[in-house]
Structures are given as C-alpha cells and as structure tokens.
Length: 552
Image (cartoon, rainbow, N blue to C red; front, side, top):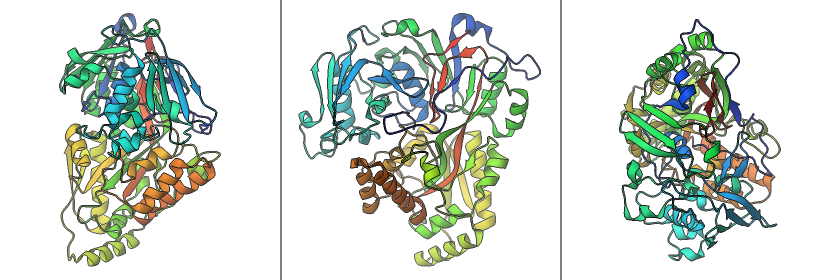
C-alpha cells in the first residue's frame, strides 16, 4: 500500500517527495479545464475516490483509498515531509539508543483528540495492542508491521498472553518507550504508517465506531463530518489539532465514482481540483487528448509501485506452477503499456520496481528483472505439461476478477484476449465492487485477481514480507519454508549486502521458480492538478498527502 521513508541506510534514487504545485503556467483556453475560483476563496478542496474505503479503522485498513483519508484524519508519532523525511508529528522529539534498539518518543503536551481530550502515550499502547491482539476479528492485515517490536510476534501468535512482554510502554503520559527485536533503520519512518496511528480508547466499547462520523474521534488535521455511502465523504479542519495554524484548507470533499470518464469530465468542468492516481484515474483512451490539451496540468511521474495479477495457488488449475508460468509468459506487456494504459509505464518482469533502495543504489538496477520472458511457444509447452500432470484434457473454467474501474477492465480484456490467442484458453473476466473484491481476495475466493502494490517504506522488505506464511496481506495461499527463511534472514540481518542477496533469492523463488505472481508493469503516477492548488505532496511510492495543500 504505500508509505515512504528515507533512512540512514536507505538513500532515494527515484526523485522523492515531489511537491505538486502546478506544472507550468495556467491553462488559458482550448482545453475546457476550468479553475475553481470559489475553492480558492473558501479553501475547500474537491477530489474523487474511485472506490469507497472499506473501513476507517487504522487497524483494519489495507488500501490506498483508506490511506489517503486516514492520513487526513490521523497523525502518527512522526509524519513525512515533502522529501519523505520523518518530521515531528505527535512526538515532538525522540531519542534512539546507540545500538538502534530503543526509541524513546517525547509526545507534545498540546496534542489532543478532536473532542478535546488530551492525547497520551497510553493511546498508542492501546492502539498497537489492538493491532496485535490475536482475538481481533477480522485479523488486522498489517499486524506483521509491528513485529519489529520486541515480543510483538509472540503476543500476536499466542506464544504469550502477557502484553507487558511486548516492547512498548508508556512511562508517563508524554513518553512512549519502544524496544525493537533487531535494529531497523526505517522504523522511525514506519511510525508514520496508518497501522501505527493512535486510537481513542472509547472505541473498545463500540464495534461500529469507525463507520459513524459521530464516534470518529481523531487526532489529525481534519475530522470526519460527512459519510454518505456511495456518494460523498467530507472532512473538516480540526480545531483541536496541535498544528491547526498551518492547515490552510477548511474542508476536503470527496466524491465517490469509479468512472474515469466522469472524473475527467468533472475535473474539466472545475468540479474537481485534483484527478487521477492514486485514488482515481484518467481514462486510458483519453490520455492522448489529455497530454495535448492539459499538458500544463498533467503530472506523469514514475513511482515505486507495481501492477500485477496474482494466482490463488490453492485453486485449480493454478495449484500447478507450470500452468501459472504459461499464463505469465503468454502476454505482451509492451502492447499493454503502449496501446492500453498509454502513460509511459515500464513492462515488469520482477516484483520490486525501480526506485526502491538496494545495497548502494537502486535495487532494480543492481538486480535485473529477468526472472522470466514472454515466449508463446514455451508457454504452450508448459501449459500442456501442466495439464498432463494434473490429468486435464481441457483446462477447467478460469475467471479473472478485478475491482470496478475502466482501466482495470480494459487491461483485463486485453490480457484475456492474449490468453485466448496465444494459449487457446477462454478466460472469463468479472468486475467486483472494491469491498467485495478485497474480501474475496482475502478469503482466497478467486483463481486470478488484479493487484497492485506500493511500498509502505523504502526498502525491498515491504515487497517480500507480503508473501510470508505469517503475513496478513498474503492473499495468494503461498506457503514456502525456504521463502520464509530468506525473508526472516533479511529481516534480522544488519549486513545490507546479505539482505539484498536474500531478497534476490526470494524474488527468484517467488517469480521465476513458483510464478506466484504475474508482473505486468511498473507504475507511473498520472494526475491532473489545478494550477492554483499548491502544496499537494506526492511521494516516491505514489501516496498523496493533501493535509498541507492550499489554494492561491
């Protein structure tokens, strides 16, 4: 999903933290794009979400839609600035021990909840215990992100029921002490991620607190004031936020439409101030016209994310690796990016995208993505071998699912057509509403599914710990002891060269040997922004922060 960091051992290669402050001069005609002058006066931002967030509970969130809105409503110990560097959030300062194992966060005394209650270190302890609690239902998908903390994994896996053994404690109302299992240079930045957000302790008595604006007590720049299902989400400036004086927007209004054509039309009409990724989309068939007519407002930027299809390795016929490999080899990625997406994406043959830090430079530069090739003859051969191994004379019916989106639909239809032409296989495509789609993936109720991943921090680990047997985000059914051992070795090692070697071996196993995933392309962020909207931050991973935005 998407967070960001720049740490001691991690140096960005991709241009990070680009501040989208308009691209060139104002468009003065010909494109039909109108500037929202009322927004400039009232400081009201209008954006669109292409899918309704399934939840606003930081412990349960796992998607970019929820991330964008949670980032408006909450703040962690740190937040990330326009250069993706950690800066004080709820914690005004911190101390890190010389061995990198102990972090002492000093919380600002003027930090408050939106209802006026003081925010204390105990609220962080409460929130993190909720994430790690093995009885939480459903199980928080990102619980493993807290496993860097001493004792956290043992508590989550029920090896102990004593939370006091976990390395997080409030030594007083304004001091939070965190002890890690091993030195983790990116841990500080990771505390800006929504799974680490504090939660008001009133939620323990209300299972539905995250669905009602009246019970959404938050601590960030904005509070949830309107949530009309399927229509609109609205957040309003939080008068009790400690840095309220630096928040210039009074309100952010989010329409809910999965139609890229509607989003683009609304943007041109001045009804939206921002359109496109990461929460919406520009119709792929409109990209040539957009590049020509709205070039001064268009932002095209490579980001550290990947678009891919994933196989349910527990479902027939994709419990056979040769069949998975045949499907992955039998498409033309260049045709997809040239003729379908048309946004300057790069074909992907590995899982870690460019822009993620490696041993010294970019991981993808140091370790080429040549784990498989597009070879139609070899694909046909592998398909026949896999079918023979399984005793098939004909392949069982195959369905590809994707969440409702014009872009996803066009990619799915193009890929299905390639499979038909190159393999002789009929594949049914099925679009699903975002919440249903996520539920089906998590419950392994699919054969092939669309997926995308943007890093939570700038280290290859965020792409590999996804697929361990203990990961709450592992929704492919992949369980492999060798893979788990490689990731665990990289997780606990302080030798960065060894870590990168482990990652290369893990990627080889995941993509080349087992073909659990079918990489398609590395993301380019595509967004339109009004020239008078300033201060929108797009980070290296494609996540967007509107909290410090404003209109001139």
